[in-house]
Length: 154
Image (tube, rainbow, N blue to C red; front, side):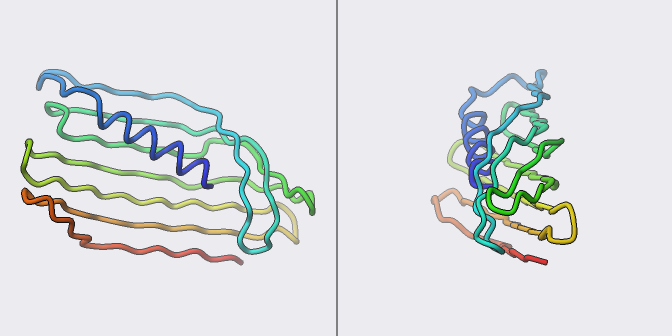
């Protein structure tokens, strides 16, 4: 999960740096990316290793001032290195950034809803949910309007 979030964050940050485009243009990226994952399952302390295919759909439009992304696991398996239990990765990460203009208000909203579902009676269901909305005003002051972070193991 750490590598998936890192990949998503780096992708989002890189796209945010793309020069602004004209109002008549929209930049869209729709691709599938294989990501190697090495993740310690907090519920059990077991190391899970495997590859997950992520569907990345990203749109930059309205003079480059609105950025939307949707990243979703579309297959792949993680395998417990001690138990041999196979886990399916499911969920979605979405975000929207709005930049009004240089020196004015910027907003960001996002959710990350990531689940690992173990196959078989010994498989654990791990659920991570993050929701956040923040605003940076024209003075550069950060306000977190809504934040929620939940991790559960079943």
